[in-house]
Length: 130
View 1 (cartoon, rainbow, N blue to C red):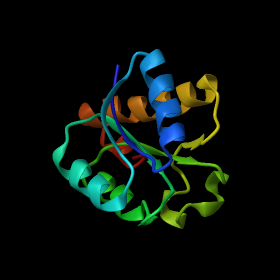
View 2 (view 1 turned 180 degrees about the vertical axis):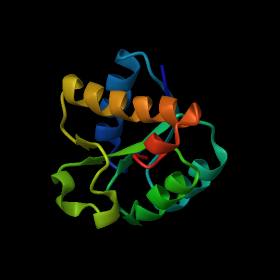
View 3 (view 1 turned 90 degrees about the vertical axis):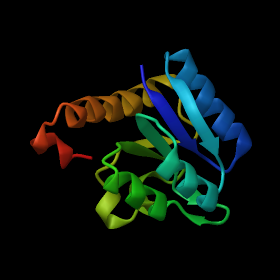
């Protein structure tokens, strides 16, 4: 399964998402709760996909999403607000509701992993879905 980079500032939600991920066979590559730390890990840590809280205590996760896009790493957003809080250019990304149940998480993680497999294989058409 996938190595997941998890960016969430609320510890209980981060633990819940990490538990769902590991229950589905994924591995948590790194967990972080702030923009500065997330940018460092996003640039230096090896992982397959990321889950980003839209709004962290110290700012928006938009710069992290930009870095992941530049690195061609698929990601989903975690939000209690749906797609309304997303920057326009990221409205096509999968969204995991912060209080999601495992089936919702499973769908979002499958979507990211599918994009990762296609981009790793060099399928240029699907790279734009990232």
